[in-house]
Image 1 (tube, rainbow, N blue to C red):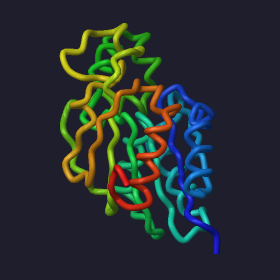
Image 2: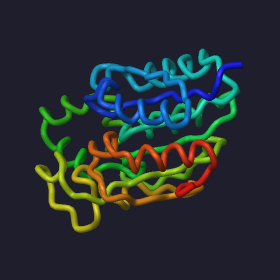
Image 3: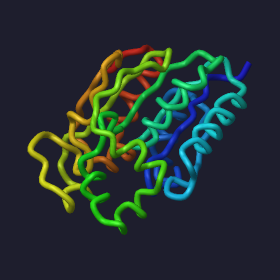
Length: 210
């Protein structure tokens, strides 16, 4: 019987390769097998991305299938699970996902060039300014960064804790089982040993700090 697997969903303008150290740490420490879900974050329509993610998850042969989303990837996971419930048991972790909408993205979208950079799928998710409730049918843990260095600070000045791209308040979601702010940047959480350790803790036990 194969061990537990993790489907990793990358964020906007990424390819999944940026998560290699995070995946290696989790594979070494927890024995997880990884499937990286790659998608064209700017060009592909949202419905096409969600359908492809559903097919990727369904094809994983493992007794447990966990989901791990960085930034926009977390929002795509939520959309997918709300529409297509998973047959395999498992947990979900979001890393710096702006589930309440992104002020940086809204600022970028003020120009036609900025809207083109976001793409239709990203715009559909990131420009919404409203709280969301978790309805994914499995336990969700959220990690938020509080080290304020990143692309978003070129677009606006945050008036609260943030990871340089996403504000802490933008990562909060009703219905999440656990929430953990850590001193890391938006991209830096993919390189952080602490983030890897806490992600593994939640996927394994349903809580951080184990």
